Length: 358
Figure (cartoon, rainbow, N blue to C red):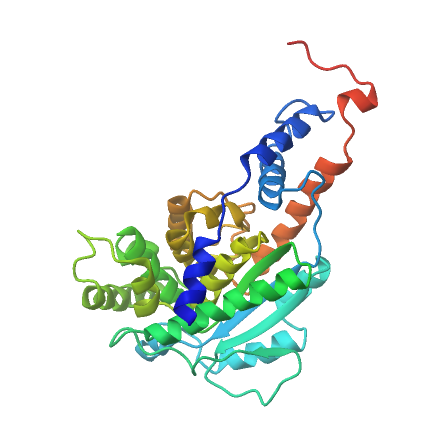
């Protein structure tokens, strides 16, 4: 059943509408400014217009979806923080005290916290979407992180939430995550997908020193040799990368990117972990890329490599590496500014301003 949901979602994804994109560019060129002078803001507006297929683009019902899950790979000592931090931070999100809560309030956005795999029980905590598949992934240094059924179930969570977002009238969403150990999963996924050595995509995560960072890269490299012994000559299949070394929250993010693309919702991805999930989505459905805005470039080295592979340009570069959707929430302001300019600026004709000589 979940296989079919994923398959039908992928098949329903259409590319951005080139006719609307061209109309958008003509509108931008007619505004009272030199052509192209608003730079990336013009690209953002044209992309949104093409994706939403709207002559007068509007944003409604913004929300940041934060997916939380634990990771068995923490058994290998790859993080400074214990797994207990994952449920503790979930409570912090629910209480409104985390960075993402502050930035979402500033952006007038809702925050939706989703438990897809936290190794704790929350006793019906108010405000939490309980979608737990299992209490954390397995240790991918020793075995596959997930079974096929678990991965599909997590992806289906994201797809279902995208369908709900459509019903709620949301047109722009952001994705974030929380899970101790998830930069290790993202690094392993980036290395497997790109063929780049683990040492080049592995960063300090929650603040590892150089020695522990090197150990983290070695753990990843050894695991990849076990799971994908031919990866340097034959690229592994994207779903197998996700299943073997990914995380439940990353699988849910993959599903939500696919679901948002199927529903023509624009989606802002946050940092490295979200981009790893989005990379799987784009491998499965290349047209999903047209729905995606890269919120920012994080300090994690693998993030730049994945974004370049996906040909996505980040909207911001603030040397952040927090996660939670923080960079994506900040990018809301950029996207909204681009659309206000698109909709509200006068044209040369309406303002009676002379255009440049041709």
